[in-house]
Image 1 (cartoon, rainbow, N blue to C red):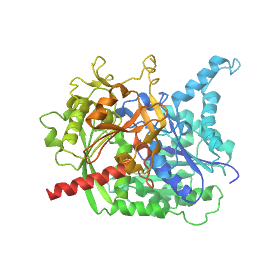
Image 2 (image 1 turned 135 degrees about the vertical axis):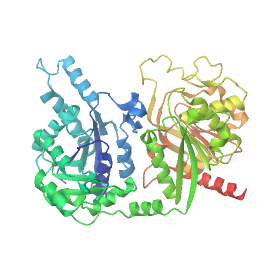
Image 3 (image 1 turned 135 degrees about the horizontal axis):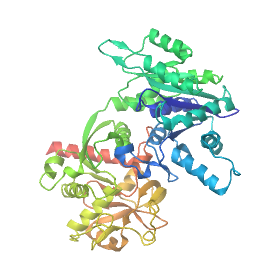
Image 4 (image 1 turned 90 degrees about the horizontal axis):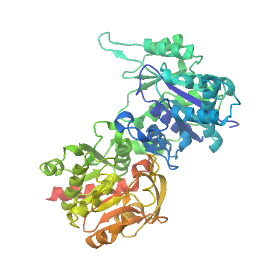
Length: 541
């Protein structure tokens, strides 16, 4: 194509309609047609990034390979497209205002009064175009966070209005996702909320080119005609997005609604052959037709909110489908685990995962979980803090270092088996001591990690501050817990395993960030295999 095509996705009526899934699904359909696609998320909050946000506030913080802490929707983009994202894929109001204010302080605006228009909107447009400039893309899909009508979203809607004129109608379009609620008392689907949402867009100078209607029930032709009439668009541009049993079915539903064809027509591009979704359909077939099940306990401290561990949950879906196994995940709050109930809570599971997190809350429950998995030889997978809990548990109960701890939780512990490195201790800025993004790791052969990866050199993403303390490495190795993955540049421990255990792996990094639909993460795949073996063993007993 001669130039990049821009697709702006807005949401109306209510939040949580699934703009991220619609964005990812449309991106997948265009990618399957041979186009290069990237998706970016614009978040209207004033935080610079979600790195300091509580997971209860904003769900999981997703980390890109270049070390950006971003919105969890970037995880959807990567899992659907299989293409890494970067800092340029997530823009926040905090970043926009910080950049503009810094320019003003340096005198870049030559004494002019700095205003929302044009200075803020110009910066927004620059960030939107930056993604295409860096990657030479056919399509850039920009998801505008929030709901049309929100005060904080107004500068972004204005930027979209300006861009539509600047880029021209054959290089940009607006897709508006909205809700058609069903009123059971009246037994009717109602389009009025959609009409009002589009009216709000029109008041801001933006006419949507495509309207996607989220609905619990199939839309009649009359409903589509009504939306077409009152919202100024062709009936073929009114798309049904009915609830699906899995988010991974949405691309096929959007294909059946011809969303990708509608987009190509709007851009005056040839329709060509249908996108090749055979691998995607094979994944869905395995996902929907498992030949076995495993029960996995996942222990964390943000379990009340499903999105807090979104990438881990999806990694189990990918790896389960690969093994043709349904992984039934039971999330258990670590604060509710104590010495009296740990066996009752965990005895019926085929495998145990201890999830990542920050802070001391619930830490003892995680350590008790590790102890139970180690002593009862249940397949164990510890991620980030989960790996650190495994180290602390081993130090206390095998090395007899009774007060061993992480200096994050207990600053005066006599045995800081998890600690800040010396070069980190002088840094005071929040986030300054964080290890973020992709780092290399060398894996030892004849280990669980090597059996999973099938190679000795890997790269994985990190988001943590504290490290395994090398001063204790010799004691751990002699007692049977040994490093199987080492950072070749810094010698920091990345993976710990235990001898004489069916499958015990703790990783300092976050493998869940790298798992995609068509390329499930090897550690999750191998962990589910270990859970299957455990299930067979339990059945024999």
